[in-house]
Image (cartoon, rainbow, N blue to C red; front, top):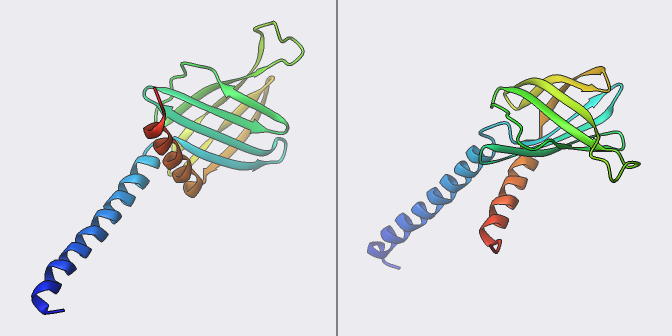
Length: 153
């Protein structure tokens, strides 16, 4: 190849690489920009604790798991990016026709990829420090973004 053709090819390759790096940076920035994500911690009394938070517009969705219990966020929760007060519900499996549920709350603060707070379950307080799994958070964010693009209306 002559040198007059190599310069445009080199510039094109540089533009492709820079575009790919920019797209990756934007993905990480969007996925890790707020309290959304996958968190986990070990607690002496609760065992393994897993929290999944996802922001969909102004609303939050997610689950809290520990022991053999999985809880859902009560709809229409107001969660800021720093202060958290999240109410979860555990449906009583013995009262399937009843709307009564057990309430579990998480009160805490978000900062630097961790949530430090207190889980209150049936009047007992359990201090926790949940760390975000950044790799899994980015993977989930990418999966949800790609799924929403291809989702039929």
